[in-house]
Image (cartoon, rainbow, N blue to C red; front, side, top):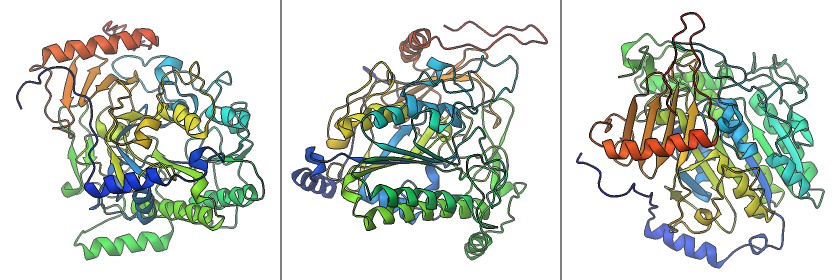
Length: 507
């Protein structure tokens, strides 16, 4: 590839002629609520550890089956370049509810991750402060009934969902994973056990449906936040679904052993990274596939109930995952290829997420938006969609995506997207900061200051490091990254407590 010319490129959006016609038709027929006559309900669904390539709407060749999510994508807008604010869970979850980058609040690792490496990680605040005015609190102030179900992992008792604006909490607590997905559940707080053997994903959908049923009896709009524990470990799923995917693998000629990662065909070593890590290179894990389908089925049940209650045209639906697919540790159950890395890594496999937004009467069905965006953007976007006043002092790192949702041809550009992870991930990821501007992504290793520069338009796999060829771009983007780190008071690595070795001062 030749040298990059001119200014950093802004992203573009591409549509087929069919999508153009659909878009013009949709804009010409806005629903009553779209004209501002009704308050918009909000359904926000968050998956845990679901990879970008794990869904059919991003990867038609996926081993997994996601018919309900694919149908949602066809009825809404897919964001192809949407990012989690971090490559692990808690920071992203906090960013959605606060509209702030994790680096601003020092909530930069999962709560409470403290793994050390060559240096000590940065100081971690492992609880979302009750001083934050969360998205749920703001919607509640606006007359919304608020409901949370599933994984919270944003603090201990005293900083649970009901302490942050949710009227009801089903299953949200301090812990980041269940010890068992089958009832009686272990390690799942604020959720009574169900019948013996009940599956947690199914239960959370049922609790959400009950809330929908209750909401339909009122005139109040609702904010339903369903945060699945799936597809996080432990890798557990109903037996019949596991057998389905074992049989599917056999029909495809895949010699599968559930949980086995020893076969050379299933893994390779990540190139050019510290502490060589095995990474799964093929989607063929039967249990993981069953977990994906179970979650997809749960989503389908909820969307079907919304239709049955005649709420579809006044309910916006959001779907996202909190970080990339788990591909380098803990059974490495999925493959993110062609994206590099996975959960815990600053590469695209760790931070680029499957995202769909359906805004009835506004988003053109079946459209794919290529504008880069990030999880801090949900807060101001939802406020503008619902007609509520913004809180720019709160969601200061978010940008409303309403222009893109209304008009996919807009030249709207939300600006640089920043990442800061001064930690050593359980999955082998190294401490790093990054910035994406247009199609370019700059990563800086916090251990030695080394840069990696990738043009994601031509190199989504991040194999061709342009750092030496594009020194001017590296300096330009490095200066922008440094200015941001100083602005948010991003915390650096700390000296090694045993050797006294000090990390380089980078900003």
